[in-house]
Image (cartoon, rainbow, N blue to C red; front, side, top):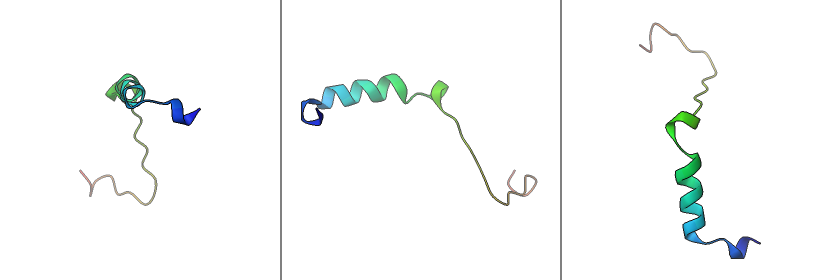
Length: 37
């Protein structure tokens, strides 16, 4: 259950999964590629 989750569990999950190699950046909208360089 949620009450059984410890801070150390969350820190380990974050350190294991929130890393640059797992990151995807998505941009949507009216983007002018030349203007934003």
